[in-house]
Image (cartoon, rainbow, N blue to C red):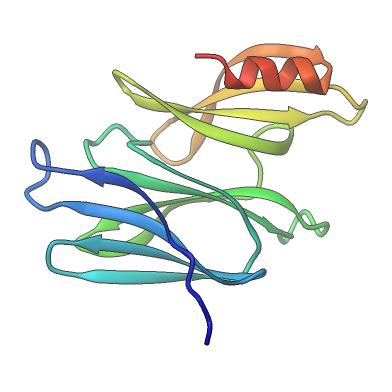
Length: 168
């Protein structure tokens, strides 16, 4: 008998949307998970045939609806080595749909988290550099995809980067 592990987060009620919605990740194996969107009347699933290392929810694009951010490990057409990537999904009429499936933010993505603000929010990322140092960057939705907003730390140790990453 297989157990299903569910991470539940991202409940949005009332003010902007008429229906409640909830995104969650449903792992099946080390390299297969589903993004699940439940609303008052529907449930939809999106298959992710990659290892998942991170899951967050928040209003990435500032439209008043909760989106979900999933960190996956995969290669891409232009980057053949498997690495950490960021996928963002939205609720489109009760269905899970990609909002952005990024192959790269800026540097070599190590981790990310969503920080809400008045404009929706930013994605804060720890990124390593080719010289073995780290940067902490923030990215904001810019119409189609994530655009660089600012650096919080540049050319710092891993320990310093994660300290800055976790602040705020």
